[in-house]
Image (cartoon, rainbow, N blue to C red; front, side):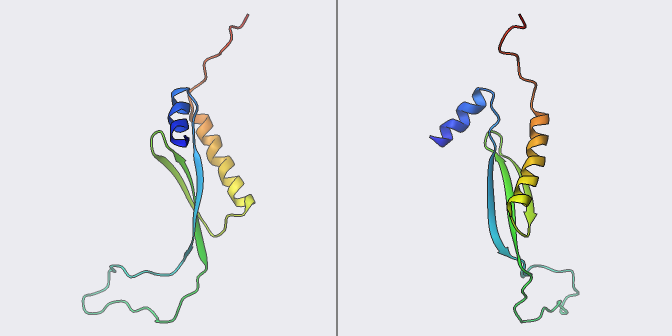
Length: 105
């Protein structure tokens, strides 16, 4: 039903955007390639590094797969609503002008 609503809304000229959050993710270094000289790799301490957590806020447009993303340390209402307001205002500004439904008479 939700998938059908996504398709139907776009066909009727309605922009559908979905908001989601992912996380929390630990902000610790992960093993990867580095730019150190061969045979002299960069060493990391073996202790657990507690750098806090991070979350990912997303806005997804199912019609074309466009995604707006922002990484944050927390998703309180103030942070979430401020970001959503900014992103949605930009999205609305980019929408085509709606045709009038009634004649000006």
